[in-house]
Image (cartoon, rainbow, N blue to C red; front, side):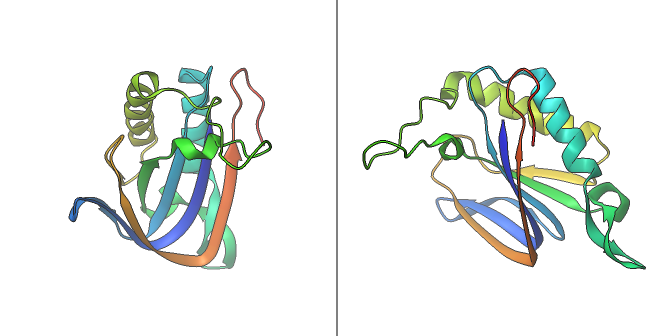
Length: 153
């Protein structure tokens, strides 16, 4: 499982010109699901995201979490995070889960995020061509990886 996490002042996702998900301050998550990913990877990632200290409290710096601040999450499915560009000019997406497997896992990930006491969890529309608008805060952008079977960074 791979997540690109961006701290935002606000973000929204549109499909065919209609807003399908939006948040105020919080985190925009671009979520890639890979072969072998399951409940363990989803739970690890949700706990990590909810607990990361990425926001400034009274003392400044990175000392408050998303949950501490009462902020929100917008999660967008992004199979292209598994794009492999090592050979040729066209990326290979062999490492990504197919849509029939990824869709229920993405739905489960959203449920688990909500269980982590995040104020509000919004999402894009799985499989749709989406437009994502965001106002970066910082900017703060991190890559989180949890390989099937427990490897992480």
